[in-house]
Length: 184
Image (cartoon, rainbow, N blue to C red):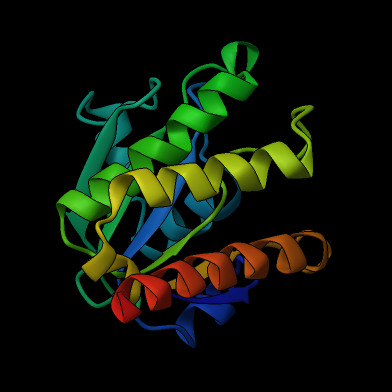
């Protein structure tokens, strides 16, 4: 498992490569904000048009997989709805981490870029955020695919400084467990 960090800006994304870019949004975010808004802009408003037409919603757990038509250096985009901000709890965060990992695992996608689903500024501590992300990955991917994971975690520089040590520890833990499994 490899893990790297990049800022959630289009210029940084242009330097990345991968199979799937994962973006999340809350129900109330109209227009889309953050990375989802930037990606929507790059896709010439495709996500907004889908929302306006009623073909895309951000209710909790809703997902949409769509091509990016060469507008981003990824093959596809996975949009994940986070539901209402007022109902977004620690449990919902954990479930969102699992939904994202489960979808990617079912797609057999091991090379992706992702943000943590709405954890910052929502009363969720670093330990809980990293723990839920770890659980989602471990529960969703089998050993073979865990070995192949190449994850770009998209986070602003301040959040990346905070997240880097515990996330790298998770990657090391997974890699150590995979080595032990191979040795047996």
